[in-house]
Length: 356
Image 1 (cartoon, rainbow, N blue to C red):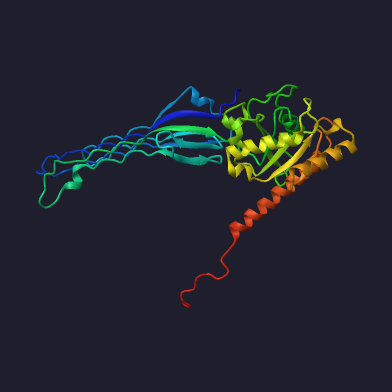
Image 2 (cartoon, rainbow, N blue to C red):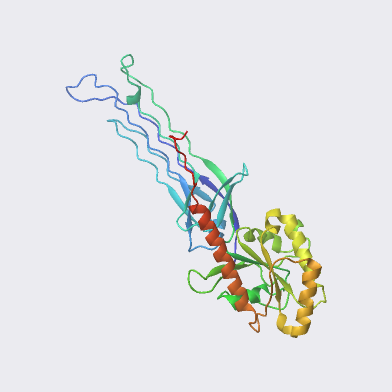
């Protein structure tokens, strides 16, 4: 299925039902008084996360979503039926933006999570609410309010722990294939990857992680060149970036220059993304002998003033992959432990009203 990561839809919540003007009429009960019931609330529109979906392609075929209106109130103090809410399933990782106000409505980040995108209208009041000692025959009732109407822009940002970054043909698809069960297209020409691919690496809840491969980024991507800029947003939720660079490009380009090109495009796209922790991964290292590889690696670190970890891997020979995987697992475990510590942190000196 073709990957679709954005769509525009219109959602309309149900209107609230109107209140009723009615009077009690029963045999032997003269002047029974008002008995008009309230209307029902209008149904709301909710988005709900679904792990079974991985694309927004369904929203290209259906763009209008309407919840049910509330029923009008009736006599004998009968309240109108509430309009049924409309639940719309979306892939986990969907961000919702109001087209007219450009406000970020919210994000659906977990399976089963609900996000209210259109509030149903409030019910109107029947004339029973308006009776008083001075108004014994009230003939007024209120109308239900209108439900929200919104044009929404949906964009899917894949949820991954690790993101692969690099020029076309840097070896990203080969790496995700070698480390996981993902099977993206691999070929010896640029832009083989046309949409993001996700793969699960490792076994067991404590060692597994999700890795994302996006189309290659080229110079000028921040201005719209190539495919990579369209999918750079998918790296925003990753906790670690692996910057892949071909150790010996076929066109004779300098690997250090290629790294700087990607860094420049990242900086233009997002200052937050360029500051994300990033590891340098030298790919296709089976093409060189150990001495040549060591020389090129040392020169890259010196020229780039690289301070982070550097790995040498070969997806074809499957060399260096275990060391890279172990390092990623250890790094993610430290991050999870730090996040848990922050959540459980308690003020050592809680407020004591007696001391104050």
